Image (tube, rainbow, N blue to C red; front, side, top):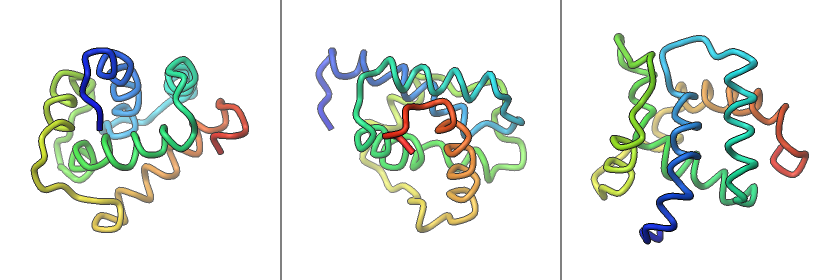
Length: 119
């Protein structure tokens, strides 16, 4: 992943929006629309968006869904950036199929508000 300042400025809003999929709260239609709007505004392709979700955000945020007292008020974009840029060991969707299934369902709700190529 490129780590130029310009790249990070573009990436942060997408990370922040996608992190809402990992909160210990019930997501609303407004939340799904907000995530979709951030995705579209980013200008990333559908393939890039999928990579951001599954290769960057999921590995660092999925544990919040498994934690009994997970964050519900939001995940700091600064924390996300530090964690995403860290090269430490992480869980993949294949290693955590339960949380991956939850995120896939939530992502499908977001896709209802995205252009067809994202689905």
